[in-house]
Image (cartoon, rainbow, N blue to C red; front, side, top):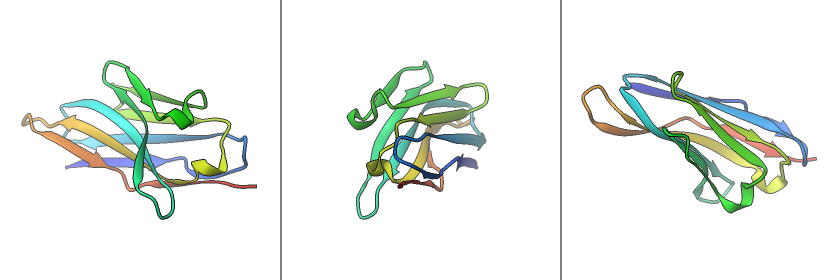
Length: 120
């Protein structure tokens, strides 16, 4: 069993900041990469940012320069620092981890999501 838990969502004003955190636990041999995805009301879930085990990062164009993803391999955690927030950043943010289990199976696990609302 692998669990992924997000925290840190909430309400922010335009121009404000929030920090999301995600922790993976359970039967994990290795985490290959972790990422954050966003689902706005009535829309599909889209990638926001990802980070590989080696520290390589990828961002959707709309958040470049405003969001920063960081990870801690030793603690199986990933964070998303969100600055200069805009109303269009509103949505449910999901953490996804791609892991290798002790039996050498590859597994993709999603968290339950955390709500981010940007509004004045």
